[in-house]
Image 1 (cartoon, rainbow, N blue to C red):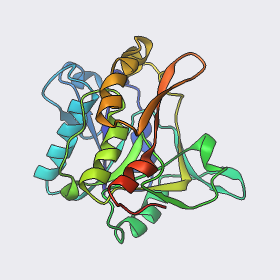
Image 2: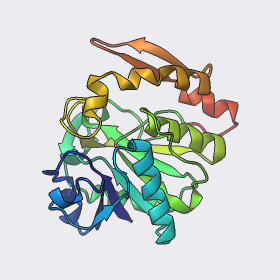
Image 3: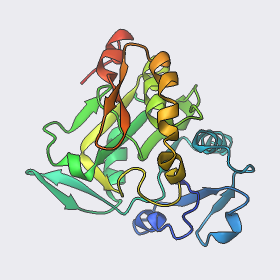
Amino acid sequence: MIVCIPTKGRTQTKTYKLFENVGIKVYHFIEPQEIETYDVPNKINIKKNNKGIGYVRNFILQWAEKKNIKVICMCDDDITSFGYAKNGKSIKSDASIFKDMLKIIHKMPFEIYGMNFRQFAWAEKNKYSINSKTFTACVIIKVNKIKWEYENTFKEDIQFLFESIKYGNGCLKFNKLFFNTPPVGTNLGGCYDGYINKEDEKCFNFILNKYLGYTKIIKKKNSLDIKWDMKSYAKNFNKKIL
């Protein structure tokens, strides 16, 4: 497994060091207008500027496929730590947890694998969820099994999970393993401007129509969001659920 980090406007990203510290190789995927401003290892020019997060994610999948790389971790550029939950507590660890995950992943039929946010992992009762809980930010993908693309909209990562259920075996979540990251839409760079301009809400009608009956809009403190009924969606396609 290698790690692929799409990054924009975060030249000081240090996420790659978490992986390098345990011997996992990392590649950074950067727009041509910014690539010379980054001092990070293994920079890959994504050829076009300002094409959106879906574009760079699809670029990564195509790049990995051409390189015959079968398993990648696609990771956000603002993750600060990893860990695991035990006895109701969140315990900081390191990226070696990915090596433990891979021992299980190689035995499983699913296309996509993820983990929890630090603030939620401690409360989980089950080690795994299958086609029933969404995840984002840091996912492991079996590239040679992917026959669909990311949408070039916000919430593209969760839509990609739903497509894995429709076109493949689906996704598995390691509920008690976690990453730590700033709250969505609060960290300069990345998709920050989009969240500030509420561009995520502009794609809601598209998502509601695409997954009609399995999504709905919910209110949060200062914004709107999408609630995803992954379990019912998987049931509709007769996929394994846990």
